[in-house]
Length: 79
Image (cartoon, rainbow, N blue to C red):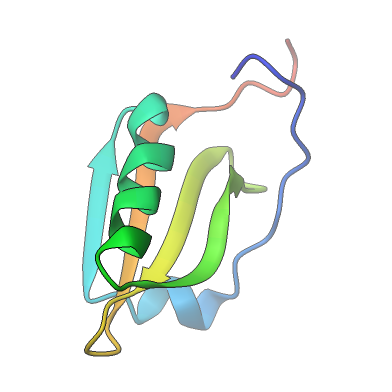
């Protein structure tokens, strides 16, 4: 996390309705998100730091299923 980023909240209903949760390192979240969009996915929430400290994004696949792409690293707001 090189740049300062403001957290964006995620509606609870989204987090509970995910058909797939893909955990990866932070630098892969952006590339997997872009790849999903290239393959026909629909942007739901672009990659960003969320209030609970994770860097994640949401996409909807062509069948309408929600996918969470999330970093397993925590953002330290005290840095």
